[in-house]
Image 1 (cartoon, rainbow, N blue to C red):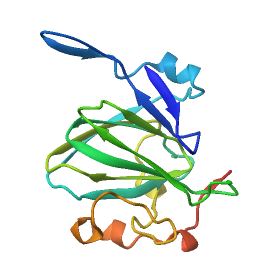
Image 2 (image 1 turned 90 degrees about the vertical axis):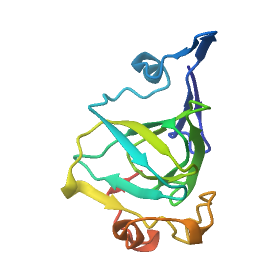
Image 3 (image 1 turned 60 degrees about the horizontal axis):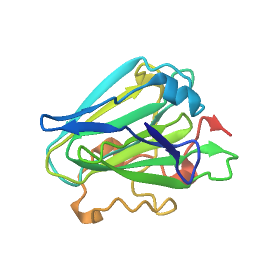
Image 4 (image 1 turned 45 degrees about the horizontal axis):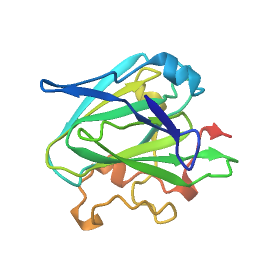
Length: 185
Protein backbone atom coordinates (compact mmCIF):
# COMPACT_ATOMS: atom_id res chain seq x y z
CA UNK A 1 0.00 0.00 0.00
CA UNK A 2 1.50 3.30 -1.12
CA UNK A 3 0.43 6.38 0.90
CA UNK A 4 1.35 9.79 -0.51
CA UNK A 5 0.55 13.21 0.98
CA UNK A 6 -0.92 15.67 -1.54
CA UNK A 7 -0.03 19.39 -1.78
CA UNK A 8 -1.89 19.85 1.51
CA UNK A 9 -0.05 17.11 3.42
CA UNK A 10 -2.91 16.13 5.73
CA UNK A 11 -4.84 14.86 2.68
CA UNK A 12 -3.50 11.44 1.68
CA UNK A 13 -3.66 9.59 -1.63
CA UNK A 14 -3.62 5.84 -1.03
CA UNK A 15 -2.82 3.31 -3.73
CA UNK A 16 -3.33 -0.32 -2.70
CA UNK A 17 -1.35 -2.97 -4.51
CA UNK A 18 -3.18 -5.32 -6.84
CA UNK A 19 -1.93 -8.87 -7.25
CA UNK A 20 -3.21 -10.49 -10.41
CA UNK A 21 -3.11 -13.69 -12.40
CA UNK A 22 -5.26 -15.39 -15.03
CA UNK A 23 -8.24 -15.37 -12.61
CA UNK A 24 -8.26 -11.60 -12.03
CA UNK A 25 -6.73 -9.71 -9.11
CA UNK A 26 -6.70 -9.39 -5.32
CA UNK A 27 -6.25 -6.12 -3.42
CA UNK A 28 -6.09 -5.30 0.26
CA UNK A 29 -8.11 -2.06 0.32
CA UNK A 30 -7.78 -1.13 3.99
CA UNK A 31 -5.06 -1.69 6.58
CA UNK A 32 -5.18 0.32 9.79
CA UNK A 33 -1.49 -0.36 10.52
CA UNK A 34 -0.48 1.35 7.23
CA UNK A 35 -2.54 4.42 8.15
CA UNK A 36 -1.03 4.41 11.65
CA UNK A 37 2.45 4.46 10.09
CA UNK A 38 1.37 7.42 7.94
CA UNK A 39 0.28 9.31 11.09
CA UNK A 40 -3.47 8.65 10.92
CA UNK A 41 -4.74 6.51 13.78
CA UNK A 42 -8.42 7.37 14.25
CA UNK A 43 -10.99 4.58 14.10
CA UNK A 44 -13.54 4.26 11.30
CA UNK A 45 -17.06 3.56 12.60
CA UNK A 46 -19.36 3.61 9.56
CA UNK A 47 -19.23 2.62 5.88
CA UNK A 48 -21.33 4.37 3.22
CA UNK A 49 -22.14 3.40 -0.38
CA UNK A 50 -23.25 5.97 -2.96
CA UNK A 51 -24.52 5.26 -6.49
CA UNK A 52 -24.76 7.96 -9.14
CA UNK A 53 -26.25 7.38 -12.58
CA UNK A 54 -25.02 10.33 -14.58
CA UNK A 55 -21.76 12.07 -15.46
CA UNK A 56 -21.39 15.52 -13.90
CA UNK A 57 -23.11 14.93 -10.55
CA UNK A 58 -21.43 17.03 -7.85
CA UNK A 59 -21.95 15.91 -4.27
CA UNK A 60 -20.55 18.38 -1.76
CA UNK A 61 -18.73 20.23 -0.46
CA UNK A 62 -19.74 18.77 2.94
CA UNK A 63 -18.36 18.53 6.47
CA UNK A 64 -19.53 17.80 10.01
CA UNK A 65 -18.57 19.98 12.99
CA UNK A 66 -17.35 18.72 16.36
CA UNK A 67 -18.21 16.72 18.30
CA UNK A 68 -19.31 14.78 15.21
CA UNK A 69 -16.48 15.81 12.85
CA UNK A 70 -15.57 13.10 10.37
CA UNK A 71 -12.48 11.90 8.58
CA UNK A 72 -13.37 10.16 5.30
CA UNK A 73 -11.63 7.45 3.31
CA UNK A 74 -13.09 7.15 -0.20
CA UNK A 75 -12.71 4.70 -3.04
CA UNK A 76 -14.55 4.05 -6.29
CA UNK A 77 -15.73 0.53 -7.16
CA UNK A 78 -17.50 1.46 -10.40
CA UNK A 79 -16.73 4.34 -12.75
CA UNK A 80 -14.66 7.43 -11.88
CA UNK A 81 -14.86 10.62 -9.85
CA UNK A 82 -12.82 13.76 -9.29
CA UNK A 83 -12.52 13.91 -5.49
CA UNK A 84 -11.79 17.22 -3.73
CA UNK A 85 -10.84 18.42 -0.24
CA UNK A 86 -10.94 22.14 0.65
CA UNK A 87 -9.09 23.35 3.74
CA UNK A 88 -11.59 25.23 5.94
CA UNK A 89 -9.44 25.39 9.08
CA UNK A 90 -9.38 29.04 10.15
CA UNK A 91 -5.76 30.19 10.49
CA UNK A 92 -4.35 27.43 8.27
CA UNK A 93 -1.72 28.56 5.75
CA UNK A 94 -3.78 26.67 3.13
CA UNK A 95 -7.20 27.98 4.20
CA UNK A 96 -9.51 28.02 1.17
CA UNK A 97 -7.08 25.94 -0.93
CA UNK A 98 -8.27 22.74 -2.55
CA UNK A 99 -6.55 19.53 -3.59
CA UNK A 100 -8.06 16.77 -5.67
CA UNK A 101 -7.44 13.44 -7.29
CA UNK A 102 -9.16 11.31 -9.89
CA UNK A 103 -10.31 8.09 -8.29
CA UNK A 104 -11.62 5.23 -10.37
CA UNK A 105 -12.38 1.55 -10.24
CA UNK A 106 -9.47 1.09 -12.65
CA UNK A 107 -6.77 3.00 -10.73
CA UNK A 108 -7.99 1.77 -7.28
CA UNK A 109 -6.71 4.93 -5.59
CA UNK A 110 -8.32 6.22 -2.42
CA UNK A 111 -8.42 9.65 -0.80
CA UNK A 112 -8.21 10.24 2.94
CA UNK A 113 -9.92 13.55 3.75
CA UNK A 114 -9.33 14.60 7.36
CA UNK A 115 -11.50 16.64 9.69
CA UNK A 116 -11.25 20.35 8.97
CA UNK A 117 -11.82 19.95 5.25
CA UNK A 118 -14.95 20.36 3.17
CA UNK A 119 -15.27 17.35 0.88
CA UNK A 120 -17.00 16.74 -2.42
CA UNK A 121 -16.70 14.95 -5.72
CA UNK A 122 -17.90 15.07 -9.30
CA UNK A 123 -18.79 11.94 -11.24
CA UNK A 124 -16.74 11.52 -14.42
CA UNK A 125 -18.63 8.48 -15.71
CA UNK A 126 -22.28 7.65 -16.38
CA UNK A 127 -22.40 4.90 -13.78
CA UNK A 128 -20.50 5.45 -10.58
CA UNK A 129 -20.36 3.80 -7.17
CA UNK A 130 -18.35 5.19 -4.26
CA UNK A 131 -17.62 3.47 -0.96
CA UNK A 132 -16.35 5.47 1.97
CA UNK A 133 -15.51 5.02 5.60
CA UNK A 134 -16.03 7.72 8.24
CA UNK A 135 -14.67 8.17 11.75
CA UNK A 136 -17.89 9.49 13.26
CA UNK A 137 -21.56 8.74 12.79
CA UNK A 138 -23.71 10.96 10.62
CA UNK A 139 -25.24 13.78 12.67
CA UNK A 140 -27.67 16.08 10.82
CA UNK A 141 -27.26 18.76 13.52
CA UNK A 142 -23.51 18.91 12.85
CA UNK A 143 -23.56 19.03 9.06
CA UNK A 144 -22.29 21.99 7.09
CA UNK A 145 -21.48 22.80 3.49
CA UNK A 146 -19.42 25.10 1.30
CA UNK A 147 -20.71 26.10 -2.12
CA UNK A 148 -19.31 23.72 -4.75
CA UNK A 149 -18.70 26.48 -7.33
CA UNK A 150 -17.39 29.28 -5.09
CA UNK A 151 -15.26 31.48 -7.39
CA UNK A 152 -12.87 32.25 -4.51
CA UNK A 153 -12.03 28.54 -4.24
CA UNK A 154 -12.15 27.97 -8.02
CA UNK A 155 -12.26 24.19 -8.19
CA UNK A 156 -11.78 22.71 -11.65
CA UNK A 157 -14.18 19.78 -11.43
CA UNK A 158 -13.23 18.40 -14.85
CA UNK A 159 -16.79 18.89 -16.16
CA UNK A 160 -18.18 22.16 -17.61
CA UNK A 161 -20.35 23.96 -15.02
CA UNK A 162 -23.31 23.92 -17.43
CA UNK A 163 -23.21 20.09 -17.33
CA UNK A 164 -23.18 19.81 -13.52
CA UNK A 165 -26.13 18.37 -11.62
CA UNK A 166 -26.38 19.09 -7.91
CA UNK A 167 -29.11 19.50 -5.32
CA UNK A 168 -30.61 22.67 -3.81
CA UNK A 169 -28.72 22.28 -0.55
CA UNK A 170 -25.33 22.24 -2.28
CA UNK A 171 -26.29 25.00 -4.75
CA UNK A 172 -27.31 27.29 -1.87
CA UNK A 173 -24.44 26.52 0.53
CA UNK A 174 -22.47 29.53 1.79
CA UNK A 175 -19.46 30.91 -0.02
CA UNK A 176 -16.11 30.66 1.76
CA UNK A 177 -16.21 34.37 2.68
CA UNK A 178 -19.48 33.81 4.58
CA UNK A 179 -18.74 30.33 5.94
CA UNK A 180 -18.78 30.10 9.74
CA UNK A 181 -16.08 27.42 9.83
CA UNK A 182 -16.11 25.36 13.02
CA UNK A 183 -12.47 24.34 12.52
CA UNK A 184 -9.36 26.14 13.80
CA UNK A 185 -5.87 25.26 12.61
